Length: 284
Image (cartoon, rainbow, N blue to C red; front, side, top):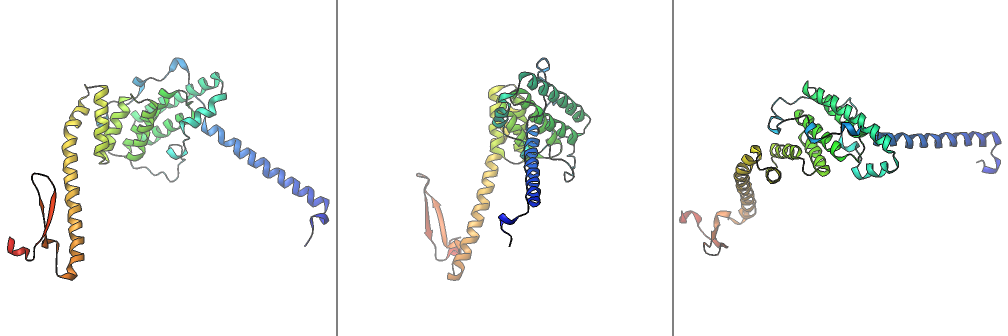
């Protein structure tokens, strides 16, 4: 085996060249990642406001048939996993000039408007991608702009029946703007569609606190408590049925069943007592 002292000079030079190439590629990869986190943006005079949110009532969000989309061959621009945290973005932008931030904001507003037009045409996947690109570009310091972009992307995802990712977008919109009623209503409807009734009721109550005139929220606050109670009763009955089956399985080898144990509730205290009955059939 050759020692390092016996290596020919030509081989040492070759190794040095390889080492330099590897270092260069590592540096390039590192640098290539940064622009993806905070690309270009949009101008102050065209500032996004809540009334620029394209979408009307939340009640029609699921009205049209969900669009079937195959994501396998497409870029991940619209996936939440690829998006950095808002605080991290703010940290990255600390040294960015105001001029650069404004430029990026202007670009993101153009992309948002493109997304709005695509949404109106029914091109929901393309609209989602446009909002995702706008979010990559829009500086994190423009919280209202980003809140609207998240809410609009949630609407595009709702149309594609992507309920869980739409809920995530609504939550991000509300983190940036807790008083954003459209995002709150949208998330409440999504919670209801995914049978998360307690969370839906909580959101509807928050909507009414902010604006008591919204009929959709008032009706939901009257309807959901009853639905939650019915669901809980059904779950309780299912759980007791499973416990009974388990008890019968354990007691069967002893010639017993859960019928040998009667549970009685004391009406005055609300407590329960269990009595053993030798021949339960005789007591019927």
